[in-house]
Image (cartoon, rainbow, N blue to C red):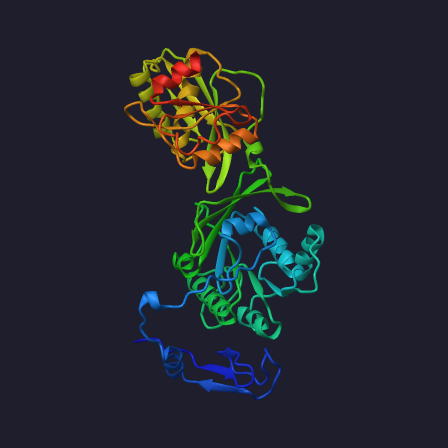
Length: 453
């Protein structure tokens, strides 16, 4: 038997709706203004007048985004918060989600926009203490601490809210749905109420979501489909740095990376990201090669370190951190077969300094020359970077955004670059400028000849 929809009561004065009839409207404060609405009639009225249109005849206007006040957040979002758009951010407990969003709320409020911060997990005193530590103080930043989401959202229209933050979807309760906060049905209902409120008021919303022990957002998978953008906020326990990535973004790309440093005064954006993964050492050590990896539109200098240790065991060990192990084993096989450098008698270890993880195939050439340098125990030039994808035939293929990578290498003081022989048309203007020397090679053997010449 189908479950009947609950009867809703709508305030005739301000339009606020609820499933519980009361004498006084919690939104406008008027008495005796609630009227019962038939759910079927309400649904029919909601979808009345919806027509079919030709897609190329629909009038489209780019959304006017609301800046979060933090450049790294805006870049990951694709330019800022979109009115009516809903952002879901997840991360480990204590990673700094609430800190980041309180800073965003303070920045937006300082621009003259009313912000409603809904906290279902902390008391008003706890949030105020954090705000004082972060230096967040604005009369336009409003705080609601409680578990009744319907009551919290009723303040959006009455206070002319331009952004609301819900911390978190697992800590508040939707009155229409049975169950305790955090259960799958409650999480779905809470998210739907927040999405509906953001769409109706045409204001952006940011929701905080808990994650499970295996790193997934807690709750039904439907939660990620309901929102427009899904962000992950992560970091290592031994490091003060935090990374913000987009897993889904209907209003931008998902390749951008935002990096923050956790300090006593809050989260501070990291401007020189390459400095996190490169120690700028002048000492020449065998097995160390530099490359420029792309994280979205951000170039990062990566220091690839390789160690080769002779072994008497018939099955040498292969260990890789920062590059997928299967990829490392493939490159070792190509180096031995196509370049004639034996790898079978040594345990091989590869590491990317700073804990950086690279999926970009442009690091293949640097990994191969680093491995060859370790096996031959000969250091590489410290002012050189290697950019190229290595195929199974030993050929060196071109990489994307080569000009952006080379400009970053030049900015950081690298004076030499080894690239694919097909990377000519885009980099003519850079060759010879500011002492940058670019060497073009076609195969891995050519790269090793250039390296050991």
